[in-house]
Image 1 (cartoon, helix red, strand yellow):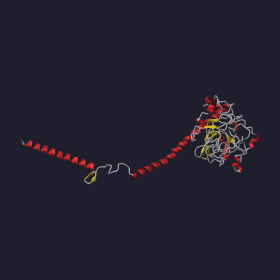
Image 2 (cartoon, helix red, strand yellow):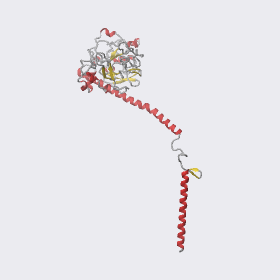
Image 3 (tube, one colour):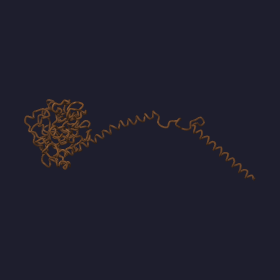
Length: 384
């Protein structure tokens, strides 16, 4: 064997030995890594040596930060949603008010809140002007608004345009029991026409220098023969004589006279924000007759004069008693009291010129009375 052959053989053997030793070292290193110890130090983060996620303290800090952010953002989100609902409510009221004005343009008069025979309200007269002509085309104004076969299926129709989106219970139904006819059943709405101010009742809550003495009729007043009834206090008070409504009779100014307002949530009763579910027969848990009269959009009870604190009564049944607060916005939604909405701090009002305004709960009663009456000769200004 030549010198070069011997040298090459030794070189190959040396390389094989080094390769074998390296392989042994790698194998040994892998074994040590699996055990987690190398030269006395932890080299592998397995489940028993190092944690794989957040510590408890870190997790609590993260949760606290998220909760704080939610607490800051949630009221803003809720406020934005309510603002949107209030805007939709104002839009619906504006549509209905413009329908009143279209009716006036076509007939040269505004509809009565209740006709001379106490059979129908303003609704069947105005609805054709908000694209509901097909709905009321078969409506019979010679019979009760709730009676079959003609009117009953019509008034059971839910109309979103007369519902406030902020009202917690939507698509409500009035179903007042009757003994001589069918139950007075109809889909409910949240808007009404202020027929005026109770000439006697409201003055109970006004200071001596603010007592009402002028015309107490509203823009959409009901038919009334007047007479001695005009001096009677209570919910049966129809006020002074009235046979016609018209824009020209609103001498206080159309921008200063309410045509349509909110009285939401009827026929359930709300006093403040406390709910008393409707109970026509006093058979519920409270054992009292409970009703915020005038819920159905077609009912002849839709309109009322503001200023009273008397509850609805049915014969000799026990009631909740008088409304414990003077007439004010969002005090109660009971018939004859005042204005009521589920918007925070106030309610929408549609004026006789078609505009919609938001009045706060702090609006004085005398100012509300001035805005309701159509010819009270008050000196109300826009700044008020």
